[in-house]
Amino acid sequence: MNALTLLTADHNRVRGLFARFTEAQESDDHQAMEEIARAIFVELAVHTQIEEEIFYPAVRDAGEEFSEEVAEAFEEHHVVKALMEEVTALPAGDEAWTAKMQVIVENVEHHASEEEQEMFPEVGKAMDKDALEDLGMRLDQRKGELGAPTLADREGLSTEQLKELAREQAIPGRSQMDREELMATVTPTAL
Image 1 (cartoon, one colour):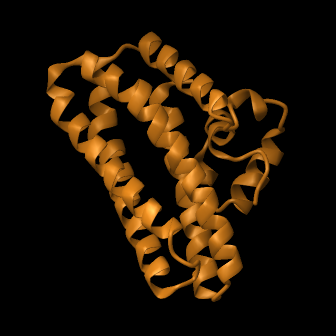
Image 2: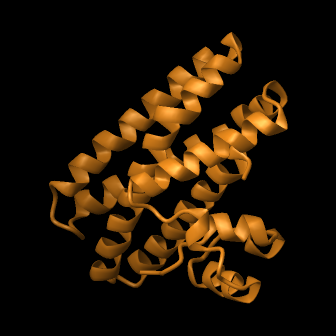
């Protein structure tokens, strides 16, 4: 799978968790908020690690014009990691906990949109199809090493099962996704 598709799928999976977090917040369901926050943190930890270890170095190697964008991306990751540590130290549902979670959502949304709209199109031009496919395989393999589901974990699911999981997981844009995109985006088992 193309690295850009895989990373965008990660973004959409987290966006689905954000939507579910907001729904739980609006329902004043503190237990659901806490469970979803933990899932968000796991997703973000794996995603930032594969980007920092594999994707960003490959992007830097693709051209010096990416060095500033990559440096900014590392800093945006740093801010979210610091906020996650702060949230973990607070009681779930506390006013400060909820406010910090909202700041995480806003920061991650900004970061993901910036990557998708600015960085990814340029990386797609700078790297050929085979390089992006190889990079995607390396990212997926590393996700597995970190204990996250890989594409292979979803291969046995039918298209209908993938669509149902995408609906349950509030994945944005799911109705326009093809099977490969759905497979990359959904979590095989929901919360």
